[in-house]
Length: 416
Ligand code: DGY
Image (tube, rainbow, N blue to C red; front, side):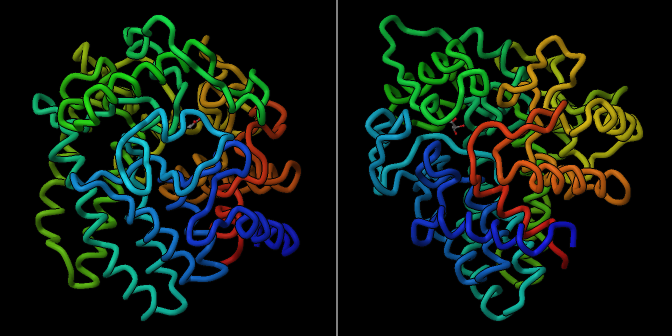
């Protein structure tokens, strides 16, 4: 066990305090609703405490699935004035209200882990059988609705869909998003977190401008995929979808449900598109692709290392990982410290995120995996369950009592 029992008990208290009855808020003051990939990862923490509750977390998220198959980024179960933009801005006309975009698909991988580690196998397998058709429909939506026909890449239409909102990966493609005059922008996030740890106003204006434009298109997902002024292929979405498709196929075979051959066929197509368009043939590094400009972007971010989880490792990528691990006292920095875009305290522009370390380590073995686990365990012991940290001195940043950080302590940094 890497974390002492008292820390694991504190992690369980965080989840219980953030539990709203079948769904969990990521952080009380900053994110007071249900977020898509947060919930899936939080279910892994619940599995240590109560497997039925873990399954309910996933079911409550999937209950908000759109008829087209999309599982939304936020479910606004009940009103809360602490977050902007709330449902009155999105106006997606769903019950319960939701945002109109998605997030990186980790649900299938989390469910696969619940099944693999089940204590009550009958309960968890029965739950999985019920959830799998909706997850499969969501994956299919990426392939059929959010697809760029020219490249075979999945189209991401908003930086919030990547989970890495203000990453330097998006600076160039986001710069061409027009911001209308008189945009009414409220930064309620700055009540809970200092401004130098959150995305800059210039980013936020464009985040909101995209929401307002899609609203005028009545959230027509095909039109968004074809015409959004921000259209990128995101490394995180692609690499996690590839891993999730493999996990879905394995679950389908194990439980005798769905059509594993169809899942395998589209997984192979996705892998081909990633290798062709996102992976640099020389360095092996995974880049974002600007679908509006029609080219791979030069910017680099730590999400490239999710390639290990997706089975796309190369010797060059392994060398890059070693360099990023050695670059700061508390890796992984989300942006390399020698990159001019690096900011040690600002959100996705440099800080180390326990959740990204956990997702990267999920695809690693041996020393690098052990190093990431040791780093995150130390950060939690010293600074609590924070959203992210300064990679140079480890100081906690962003939200406090953060659910997915508590969950990964229970799931990853406890024994077994
Ligand atoms: C936010 O509001 O900061 C979130 O990252 C959106 O998902």
